[in-house]
Amino acid sequence: MSTTSSNVLIDMQTFTRKSQTKEYLAALMKETVIENQYIPHDPTPKQAEFLLLPNKESLYGGAAGGGKSDALLMAALQYVDVPGYAAIIFRRTYKDLALPGALMDRAHGWLDETDAHWSENAKTWTFPSGATLTFAYLATENDKYNYQGAEFQFIGFDELTQFEESQYRYLFSRLRRLKGSRVPLRARVASNPGGRGHEWVKQRYLIEGPDKGRIFVPAKLEDNPYLDTEEYELSLLELDPVTRAQLRSGDWDVLPDGNKFKRHWFKIVDEYPKDARLVRYWDLAATEPKQGRDPDWTAGCLMAEKDGQYWIIDVRRDRLSPKGVEQMVYNTATMDGREVPIYMEQEPGSSGVNTIDYYARYILVGYAFYGHNTTGSKEIRLNPVSAAAERGNIHLVRGTWINEFLDELCSFPEGSHDDMCDACSGAFTKLVEGRERKFAVNPHVIGVKREGPRY
Image 1: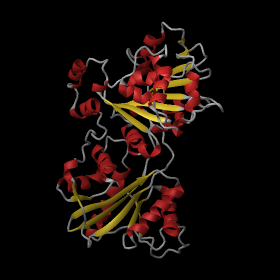
Image 2: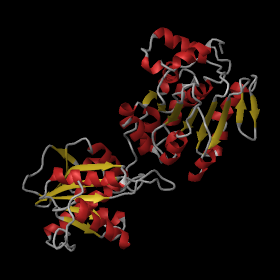
Image 3: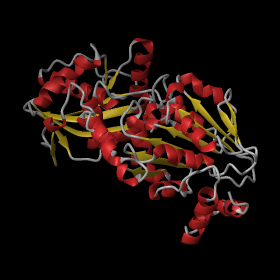
């Protein structure tokens, strides 16, 4: 690597505030990649785009064969001439890490004949500058705590959709540097669509990403000139259509269907009958991450019914603090209007009773608010909804929520979340009961001393 790379690093402090001139980008590429003795080949155009990004979080890939592993390893090695620089790259299991051709094996191919030193016990490369590159894994949820107190300037995740969101968030908090350090803090991840973490990765990078400064660099087979594309194409033909679309095309929208719903059962419409009966149903969720999965969502479904036809008008969900959830429920009730009954799933035990009573006394004062004790499994509660949808009796009123809702509904029960499913089945149940005039739950709006609204 050029001895003048420190000049680029000084400029890096103000890189995000400067125009990205061709001259600056060329200098950065030359000094941190092209002249880097630890990177044995030039990056592809897509890899170069990824390596030059100034923002803190970036996702590379999408399709198989796009050069994700090399891009991640190159990014980790960009600043190993800087004393004190520390980089770490994670796979989900040690087996994934140690596979032939995987990142750790690839790093040996790049670094064995250089002046970098390998520690087998620590799984760490140490460079003459004192910089380090470590390979690690997070097989269990608690493995993340092995890095409590650690500090890294680069954190990489290979195949991010295999991880839990809670693991990623915790390690992201380990991105730190000493005051005055010239090395940029970077979280760089690579992944194909699919896997247990598909939904949260898509949400973080493809949906929220543009507004949060997170950049997705899509790369496909055609973007990697180092791969035998013809042979790789033949191997992909052995896959099922969904997996093939995810790996070949980098399609984040195609998901394996569950056994309850099909997308073509739902007709998207522009409006619903204004004389239909309406119900809003809430499924509350804790915001704290649960072991082994990313956090649940609070979800609310507004549904209408007339003459045995059903319209899902609005579905909203969010991850908020308890106070934030209260505000969302209240604001939604205000938007829906006092004529719309509100139901909320009541958890078993005294805590569920207390939650319903609290919302009745302080949050939804003056609204027809009901607690609802559910019975049977989630699958059983969704059976009537599935049957009605298959008959063409459930319609979706056009809105921005539809794609996420259908993703979750049509992947049930294989998907990682079912909060919107629960809200939907609850609203449907209450509208069916209304048709039969068999409301079994006493409304809190009657006979309860009110303390006044909190919002």
